[in-house]
Picture 1 (cartoon, rainbow, N blue to C red):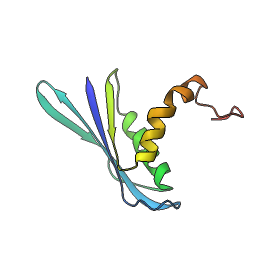
Picture 2 (cartoon, helix red, strand yellow):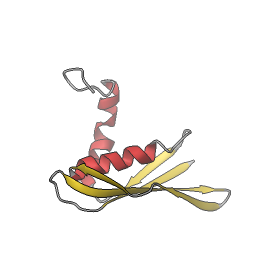
Picture 3 (spheres, rainbow, N blue to C red):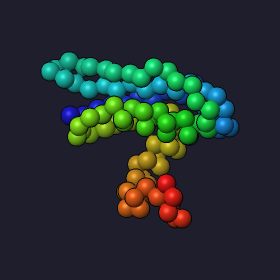
Picture 4 (cartoon, rainbow, N blue to C red):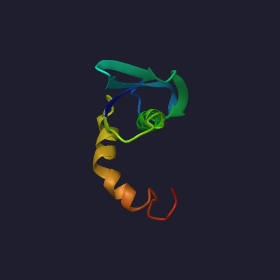
Length: 100
């Protein structure tokens, strides 16, 4: 199954500030497009942090194996997920000092 995740963040300001995040999951099931979304949520975070939180919330909704494509305006965060995920997985998602 292929799932598309669409991420929305209310402001692109890089500063840590209060902002709204939301997500929408979309997939084809029995020849029809089905969507599921999370309610908008207020977080106090940087732009990249807010995008990451929205991706995490969406990914937690997925219950089985599938291919995932993420759509968001935050190209930096999407690039980090795509390029760094194998390295993060190798380290058990721990940083150099061993914390997560």
